[in-house]
Image 1: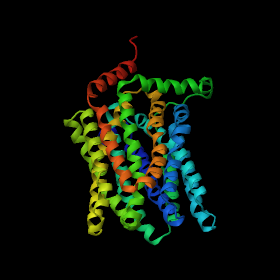
Image 2 (image 1 turned 90 degrees about the vertical axis):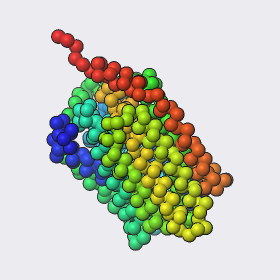
Image 3 (image 1 turned 180 degrees about the vertical axis):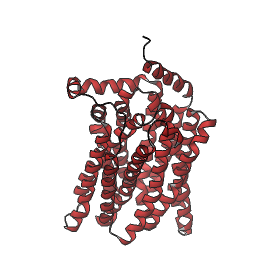
Image 4 (image 1 turned 120 degrees about the vertical axis):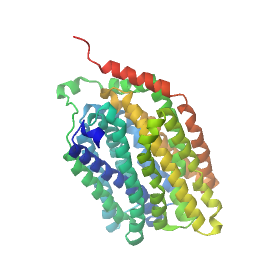
Length: 427
C-alpha cells in the first residue's frame, strides 16, 4: 500500500477496493447462476443460452457510446452506486418471480438486459475512476491490487456458487448476488475522491453528439489505442464463443454437474490471482508491450484445453476435470497480466477529461462484438456441435496477439505527449 498512501489515505482506497471486490463477486455469481437457471430450471438449449449471453452484452452496442459521454459529465462514484443498486433490484426479481411461479426465459432475458445496461455504466465509470484516486505513478500498482481482488472473487465466486447450487436452487443464489451489489453501493457511499465537480450550466452547454465524437476521434487518432481495440475486440469475440458454450460442455456433454463446474472454474481462476501478484515483478523486467503479447498468447493457447476435455471424456471424469482446471488456470493467468497492463496503458495515454469516453468507445467495439459472438455460438454450436464450435473460438483467439507486437515505442511517445500537455504553461 506504500505507493498508494502518498496519494490517498489507506482507508479511502480500502473502501473502494472493498466495493470493487463485492461488485466482482456479484458478477462472478451471476455468470455461473444465470446460465444454470436457464439450463436446469427453465430447460434452455444451446440457442437459448446464446440468447441469454447476447442479452447481457447487447447493451454495449445500444448505449456504449453515449454512456461514455454521460459518465464524463457525471460524478463517477455516484454513477457506480446507482448502477450497483439497479443490478441488485433486477437480480432480486428472479427469485421473487420463481417463488411466485412466473419465472420464464423472457423474464430472464429482460433481467440480463437490465443488468448488462447497468454494468456498462458501472464499468465505464470504474475504469475511469482510478486516476482520480491515485497519481500517475500509482495507476499500475492500484490496478494490480484491484485486479488481485477481482481474481480472489473469481476464485471464491464460482466455487461458492457451485457449492450453493448443490443445496440451494439457482434462483435463490441470485438473491445473494443481489445482496453483494447492495453492499457494493454501501461501501462506495463512504469513499471520497479528488474528482472535480462540474457545474450544471457547464454540462448543459455541452453537446452530447460532439462529446461522443471527441472520444471516438481520440481513440482512432491514437496508434496505441487503435491496436488495442483490434486485438481485444477480436480476442473477446472468439473468447465469447468458447465461454458461451462452456456451461453446456461441462453440464451436458461431460455431465460433471454444477458443483464440479463451480470448483473447476474457481480453482482454475487461481491463475489470475497469481498473475496479479507476479505482475509488478514481471513489469520491472519486461516492457508493457512484451507483457501484453505474452499474456494474451498464453490466454489464447490455454483455451484449447476446454474443447480438448471433450476428447478424453471416455477416460472417466478425472482427466476432463484436470484439463478444464489447467485451461482455466492458464487462461486467467495470461488474461489478467494482459488486462492490468493494457488498462494502465490506456489510462496513461489518455487525458483525464476524456477517460470515460475513451473507455466507452473501446468497450463499444470490444464488448459490442460479444452479443454477435454469443448468437453465433448458439447457432453454430447447434449445427456443428459444442466442441467443434469451441475449436473455432480457440483458433480465432490465437491471432489476436499480432497487433500487440512493436507497441512499446508508441506507448512511450503517447504517454510523454499526455504528460507534456498536462504541464502548466510558464508564467
